[in-house]
Length: 122
Image (tube, rainbow, N blue to C red; front, top):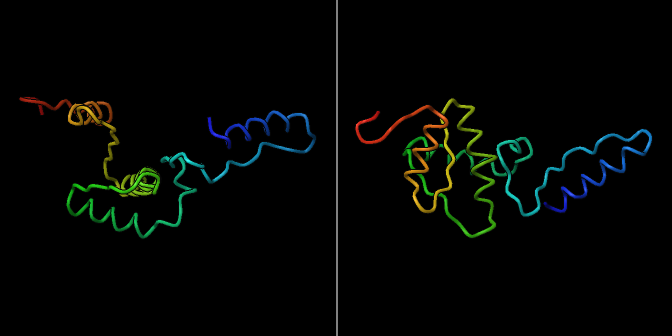
């Protein structure tokens, strides 16, 4: 649990006893956690990168996003690029496969697109 989550929980518990106070609005910053698709409305300032990378992905169908730890790769991908591609009607899969990425892709395709690929299966 992050500090912001604890503060919000405490605020909600205390505000129940204070007259005229409602739940505190969601904070737009995530501290060290990355932004997700649900955070897309709060994710801003990297529109040019989202545009550039989305265009390259669509033009080449493969793209490697790399960089130092903590520079915002996951946030850029999850809250910027993925929502952008989905709103344009593209199917998007998110996998985190370190041992067998092909198996992870097959599982994700089956779960998200009812795809049963493999040798002899299309």
